[in-house]
Structures are given as C-alpha cells and as structure tokens.
Length: 165
Image 1 (cartoon, rainbow, N blue to C red):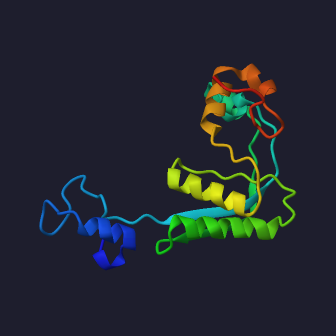
Image 2 (tube, rainbow, N blue to C red; image 1 turned 120 degrees about the horizontal axis):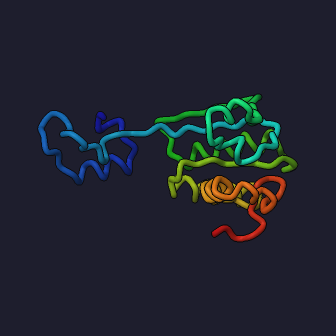
C-alpha cells in the first residue's frame, strides 16, 4: 500500500512502525499497511418462515427439502475505500430512512463482528430513533441448532423471549 493512499489514522500508525525488509513486507507483516473497503447494502426482503432445520439441515437429503430463504430485491449497494466506517454506515442508514421514513418495516443490520462498526450502527440507530439492536444472532442460531424445539421460544422476528444459555 502506498503511504499517501492510507487513511490518516492508518498512516500515523504506519509511520510509527518499521519494516523488517527494505522494499516489501515480510510474510505475515500487514499491520498498518493495508486498507479495507467499507461495504454496505440496503435491500427489501419478504420474510420467509423457516425452521432451524431449513437453515442448518443435518444431511444433504434434508437440504434439498428445505424451505427457501428470503430473496433480496430493490437492492442498493455502496462501497468506499476513501471513506471510513462511520461515513458508510451513515449512508446506509440514510438510504434505509429514505425508504422507510415512518419506520414501519423491521430493519436488520448484519455485521461481521467489528466492534467499531457495531458501535457506529448503534449510534446511527439512535440518530434515526430505531430501537432494539440485537447482537446475539450467532447465539440464537447455535441455540436453535442444538434445540430445534426452541423455535417456540422466539417471537415473530426471532428475538429470544427468554435469556439464552
């Protein structure tokens, strides 16, 4: 990565470090030298009622008999290398707000676990006055995989009615 192409915070961190090799990074040496694109999407999807077995089938035979999941339509996508996560997440929420200004629909934000992105999503949700941001999707899926009968423990949009183990 060219030093002049780094974001300010990454460039500052890179300036404080030294390279093992003169002309390139050694194997595994990437810290403060690469730049990730921030990517976001907004789309519409009609909910599809499925069981945990539809999402995580036990065998290939059962996989062929599963109920298909929702299909995304009316997609909007953004990606930026020059903008930071805050700006891109702001754009995502602005687009969602434009599509649903009266907040009638259920909004879902999927994140790969980056704590900064999660905090930015929570801040944007507060800004547009959206409630409940759930971070327990992995726990819900694991609980359903282990206990298929637990579907009755979730409300109509998948929120646990009780605390999960």
